[in-house]
Image (cartoon, rainbow, N blue to C red; front, side, top):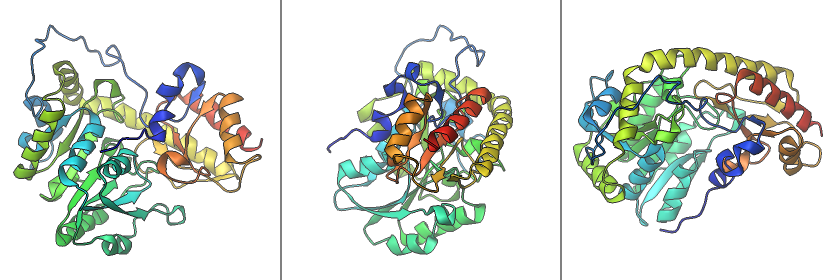
Length: 366
């Protein structure tokens, strides 16, 4: 495998330097939480090798509301990125084929490229509100297709499948004899209620998620993958053991405490994020230079410039940051035109979000 750094990571705010950004609207999560925010004090844990699959209690908490699944269907990983890496390297080789919906989180594209498998893209169109064309998807699947890869809620648009669409996708991939990978990182931030956990709908379905986005704790590096196929789960465990053996007992303890209080943490977060989403929606309606599909989940949306700003998009992003101190995620992070940008409305405070939106409007005008 050959690795190349992804633009979304090279240009990430943590790499650029948080001190260099006044209004950070590039983040894809809620505000970063501290141990004090979460009212946690780490006890005197024994720093041993943990269970290779991840702590049983943590795995039980992840599937607690899903009677079709149990702790044995869950593998704890170092963030969702490691889960995606494990899945791709376990299931794809140079003679295999992947169908991936795009735009997409960069890891879902770059790891298969590093493997060297063949790939077909189903490009979501802004004019169709980033809805998936199931006929195009079905036509792209070949006898060599091993995985169909989607995200829901979608990153970067925030658009979601309906429950019927998700079940149709599960049935389609089952009939075609391939795995369905659903990156569900934003599932707990679905504004009209979450869809069924995808892995609960079929043995060929693999769900991936983490605590990074909805809970604001990317620093503990806790993610997971879920599959009810025991043979596949054993393969993924073997991959994890060769990568890291096990996870951090400190990280897993923190994750247990957070998920044990899931509702009390998520409910106020959802209230606040609905307010932020409404603020962004109102701004879009009053901003004639932009158009945007309404996000249904997550904390990001993907506005589109109706026309080139003065000096072009490169000049726009430069003055947005240099003059107005505001950072967003340009379209090339997602292999899209830079006339699109990902706007993260979950990380900034309300005041920062309002100031950042006003800065975008000013930068669009030169």
